[in-house]
Image (cartoon, rainbow, N blue to C red):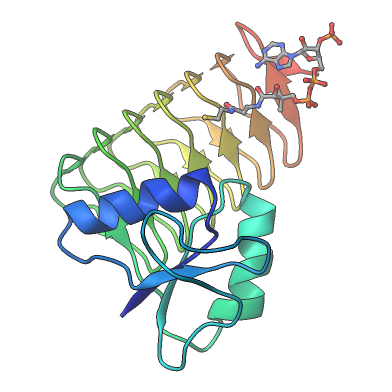
Length: 193
Ligand SMILES: CC(C)(COP(=O)(O)OP(=O)(O)OC[C@H]1O[C@@H](n2cnc3c(N)ncnc32)[C@H](O)[C@@H]1OP(=O)(O)O)[C@@H](O)C(=O)NCCC(=O)NCCS
């Protein structure tokens, strides 16, 4: 009994992925939206016993919703069937992997991490809690993305680097050095903004 938290654009994308994966959601939990959304009901309070999946793009908002709603309840995970998860990939509770993404061998997707459309995650790369790789971004092998890191659309993170907790990699950036926790980096090569 999967309910998606967040009835916005990403929520509808995750609902689509869940349907494609053969686990259609029952509806959305959202206190700001009116239903129906994507043909599904929207409720303000999660139904008793619901399996919840937070579908909000911003990592810190996602974490807040996880703390408020998901703690102590079952958390779902959705992987679109057209995504490729290689051998040895660890998928934690709350993970979302959208269509066309590729996650290479022995990568670790931490709790509530997201890999969006067409993004790639290299071998042995670790995504921390709620770390997020937006559409078409490429994170190379043996990278560590700390908790709450956001990698913008089309960005590249080169192999072996560490991106500290809460850092933001701007859209289209190419990260060639470690990124400090909480920093925002942009450009090619990426520099703090
Ligand atoms: C880097 C980022 C976080 C900055 O956001 P912000 O603080 O709101 O920045 P602003 O839009 O106010 O722009 C501030 C300056 O940074 C520049 N800038 C913004 N994003 C940039 C990027 N990705 N690369 C290079 N420069 C960028 C702006 O042109 C502006 O420059 P200026 O001061 O010379 O005019 C954001 O632009 C970004 O890239 N986020 C990634 C989100 C994403 O990929 N979304 C796609 C969803 S599918």
